[in-house]
Structure formats: C-alpha cells, structure tokens
Image (cartoon, rainbow, N blue to C red; front, side, top):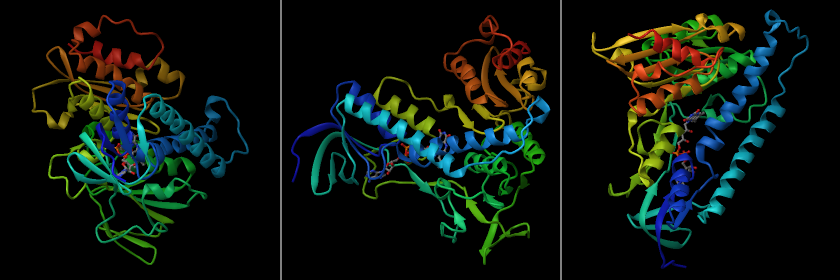
Length: 416
Ligand SMILES: Cc1cc2nc3c(=O)[nH]c(=O)nc-3n(C[C@H](O)[C@H](O)[C@H](O)COP(=O)(O)OP(=O)(O)OC[C@H]3O[C@@H](n4cnc5c(N)ncnc54)[C@H](O)[C@@H]3O)c2cc1C
C-alpha cells in the first residue's frame, strides 16, 4: 500500500528529541507521524537516564541507611532486594511511558511502532508503505561504543544496557571510561557494596567538567573506596582477566565499557535531513536533545552555552558555561564557596563539595557545583546566564534560610 497524503512532519525516533519535536509540532497544528522501531521514549526512558536514576535512588538510599549510626539511627539487618528494585524500575518506566502515550493521543500524533527507512528528504518507507512529508527529522539516537577490537559478549564484557535487569550484587567490577555514565555506574556499584575500579585514559575523572570538579571528585572517590586509575586504558581481555595499560591485571566479575556512543544515521541522507539529539553528534544528553528539538520547531533561539550538564549520585555534580581551564589567565574572576560553611549542609551532614562561579565584569560566565542538590541549583545560574541578569541584580534576591540555594547566594555575595 502507498500513502498519497503529504504530512507536515515525519519524525524518526521517539526518544527525548523525536518525541519533543513531535509534540511541539502537533501542538502548533502540524500533522505528524512518529516512527519508532523499538520502545516509545527511546534510550532515555528505556535504557538510559530513567532506569539508572531509579537504580541509583534505591542503592544510595540503602547505603545511606546502612551508614546512618552517626546521625542517630541504629539499623541492624538491612538488605538490598534486587528483584524489588527491578520491579520498581520497570514500574517507573511504565508510568512515564503511559503519560507519553496519552500525550501522543491527545495531540493526534500518528505513532507507528516499526522501523522507518529513509528514501529521500521527503519520503519514508515503512513496512511496504510510503509516506510523503514536507519535512523529515531523524532523531535516531545512538548505540554504545565497544572497546576497539573487543566486542560486547554481554556476559563478561558489558555495556550499561546489560545491567538494567541486574539480579545479583557483583563482588568486583572494572569500569572503563570515567565520563558521566561511568561515574554513575561506579557510584551505583559502590553503594551496593561492590569493589569498584575505574580506569580513565585521560588524566582526570569527568574530562569535560571544570578541573576543580574533577579533582574534588577524585578525592571523594578515594574516600569512598572507589579505586581510580587515571591516564590508564584497557589493553586486553583474556580468560576473564582484564589487562590495563599500567600493567595491572584484574579479574572482576565483569568489565563495563562506558567510553561513549556511536551516532545512528542513515547512509543515504544526502545531508538534507535534520538530525536531532544524540544523532546530531554533539552533547549526548537528553537535556540537549529536548532543548534542541524545542528550538527547531518553535521560536526558542538555540544556544549551546546554556545547556547544563548533570552527573547524578552522591554528591551530585552540575555545571553550565565556561570551565576555568579554558579561560585565558586574567580574563575572569572566580569565587569558590565550600558547602562546609552552609548551615543546611551541616544540618543534613552534606558538607562535601562547593559552588564555584566564574564571572566577567557583572556577569556569570560559568558555574560549577559539586554537592547535594547540584542538579536543582544549577538552574539558578542557568536562568541568570540565559537572561543576562547582572550579578548586582542577583544580589537583591531574598533567599530562604536554611537552604542549599543559599550557597548560590553566598557565592555571588563574595563577588566584587
Ligand atoms: C546509562 C545512561 C544514562 C543516561 N543518563 C542521562 C541523564 O541522566 N541525563 C541526560 O540528559 N541524558 C542521559 N543519558 C543520555 C540520553 O539517554 C540520550 O542523550 C538521549 O536518550 C538521546 O535522545 P535521542 O532522542 O536523541 O535518542 P534516543 O533516546 O536514543 O532515541 C532514538 C530512538 O530512535 C529509534 N530509531 C532509530 N532508528 C530508527 C528507525 N530507522 N526507525 C524507527 N526508529 C528508529 C531508536 O529505536 C530509539 O528509540 C543517558 C544515557 C545512558 C546510556
């Protein structure tokens, strides 16, 4: 069968990028067909941000309760129930997915859960049907990168998708790659009580962060007992043993490879197709994907500078704008406010970390937070930066006491 109608938008991929673009376009009255070959919600909902954050929440709550004697809680018999954790993870995915299904329905988006083939810049073929569009958007996402020459066997050499239905607490794991994904999994296993080693080929953890954040995190990992090898790569894997470039030979339960992702693109796109999200090939974050999609189909001006990055776990890490190491000497001012000075952090026993602000004249050009609530606090800086709000104006804002937001205020107060 061949469709002869021409639709406004043909969107391939229903992850954060494709779904956001579809909903906004449909809200504006455009006709939209959304194609998805796998599960609605893409990697983010089914294999990425949402399942990992749900796992992290359980294992960190477990670890916190286990270590709560010094805040006046005596606990004797505490156990991690992995089947229950997986059940909850699937429940969270299901809840969010049903909200997405409702939105698709409400906005009259045609959802076709099959693989789409790109024919040309106006035509998609899907299971024998041909569809015509004024505009095609490919939000086709990405897939995990394997280590050169070493394929995933999904038993000993794993990617994060292999861990979403974990049914046993591993004794020892080796993680290759200390970007956001590697850091979050290191924290998950550490909270479970697993012996964690992480190897990173650059000279620091979280290479894309501000250098002081990396250094603080390295200190925290040491205190938490996470073994870190920097400037160290995986050399080979043989007989369930992993050899690192520093000569160490480890025998973990498995090796988790988190060294980045490959973009998924059509080989015949002739450069006339708009790619969004991970498939665009820039920041591989749902945050970026949704912002970019909103900008494409509405009148928001897209600006890479204002995309916050967040790494979850204890303590959270978040940043926006310039990193100090990228700024020329003498071109900026900086202030670092330690959370140990903050009343609320002392009440909560959350005094690790700091808020660091980089400024030029009366404006914030970069903000870096490591500590409790960093994922929320970063947006105070995002709002100020996006709207060019002067530091002298921010100083007039009244902040509630005691709160973590006061760390933002205190750091700003310390600026000349
Ligand atoms: C473990 C992990 C944790 C993460 N945590 C975070 C986080 O905390 N915060 C954050 O911002 N980001 C996080 N990310 C990144 C985030 O998941 C991705 O950046 C995001 O999913 C990208 O969205 P997307 O829409 O571009 O692509 P995807 O979510 O990858 O969706 C693409 C979709 O396109 C479909 N598709 C591809 N080709 C076709 C075709 N030919 N026909 C039909 N359908 C097709 C795929 O099946 C897929 O569902 C995490 C990623 C991982 C792996």
